[in-house]
Picture (cartoon, one colour):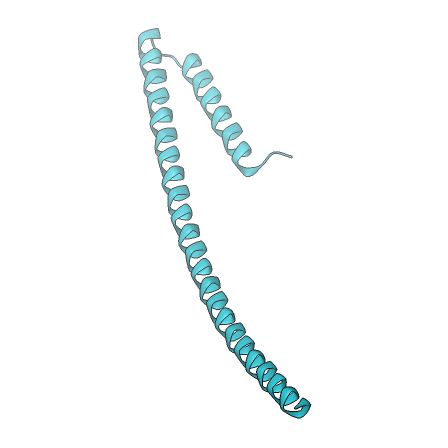
Length: 111
């Protein structure tokens, strides 16, 4: 099944072909018809260019948003890791003090 972007392209191509056929069958001179076709082609190219620029701008904006969110998440995780590291240091210090206290107690009772 075609995506919505593909459907839009097919619609635009069909519209352009239909307009060309209508112009060719219209009661105008060849020069007038060629001028109309040229104008319509320019309009289509301009519209496509605008849409491409809009799409690029949208992608750039979304990229900046995602980069900002990723940066915020990274900063939060760094802070969380820093806090956990501090907590681990406190626990290790307490464990060392407890171990030293028990070792000293065992040495005193052995004497």
